[in-house]
Image (cartoon, rainbow, N blue to C red; front, side, top):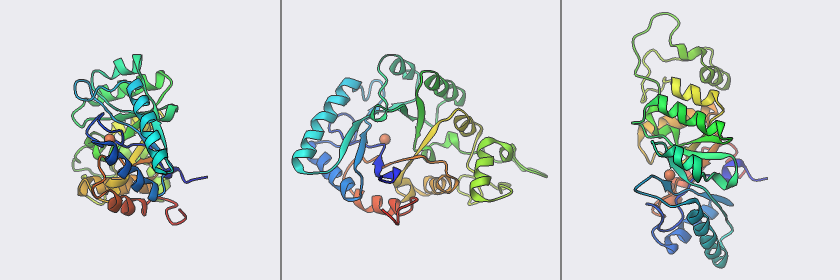
Length: 267
Ligand SMILES: [Fe+2]
């Protein structure tokens, strides 16, 4: 069985549906790079943002079918699966109610949380996804500042409440640390615990977390890179994705990021 990370759970491979691949040729170039990196299954997850990217579930499935034909003709050994990267805004309940599209027809519902969203609304939306029978999969949590700890206040004594939170306990168990260090925590600090009440809630309701391989390689900058390495070390990620939008530099950073994943040495 292939390692779990050899499924790419998040990509923008389908040409013309969003800001990803612009042409079939570009999509084939990206698919070839993913194939050479070891991926055998790729979820195609165009953005779903009302008014900007409005492909329906049916259109995504048709595009997957069409591109699969191109891959097969080109001899690229990858199975494409349908999906969508749902933007968590006020329109999300509409998609959830009328046209939900999960990752490869699993129960995973890929969700992008804007850093400007109200955390209470995020909680309600994710709970609603659970009630609907799906599992919210948070796309690249390392890029969402809502999931990071609030800026620290000076503390005395035993420290933040996070130490006793569910994610805090998970982090301690996984890192073997008896006490999270955070008195001077910030996003850029090596000591940051990297949890928040919202992240804790999402763990609590069974949410899953998809890390971007490019974040591990540092393509979004220092802060997402540090967060992603902490999340990786803490065992937060259960799924990985390229989030590839273009073939430019894809091969380079994909290799760098994949080398950091568990089991990379055997694959
Ligand atoms: Fe994406």
